[in-house]
Image (cartoon, rainbow, N blue to C red; front, side):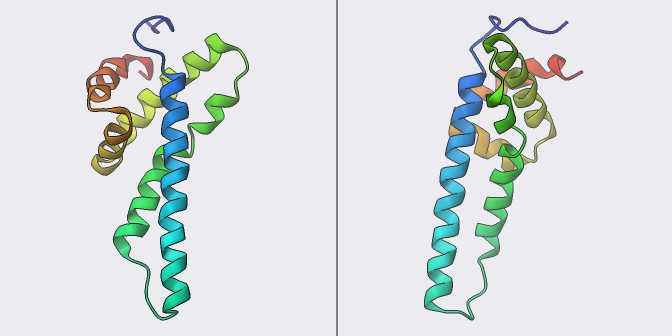
Length: 118
């Protein structure tokens, strides 16, 4: 049974916040990489920074399209499904980032939402 949008907190604002924070963090990380490259052309990119960018991109890449939905009820339904799916399919690193952005309580909520994607 698919949950109604009024079951639990709204997910569309959470998706918007996650995508916004993701873009800001990626931009910040790539700016740091660019500055390092300008100062020392031979300096390799920090693998940790590159991995962090990939993690954030993995989480956010499919979520932004949810926000384009004009109908609020449909946007909320799609946001709930997309976030539940992303949580279920994410690596431990991705889940840590999601919790860092949305708060630790999101883990329990998204685990309960698992039926949305089944």
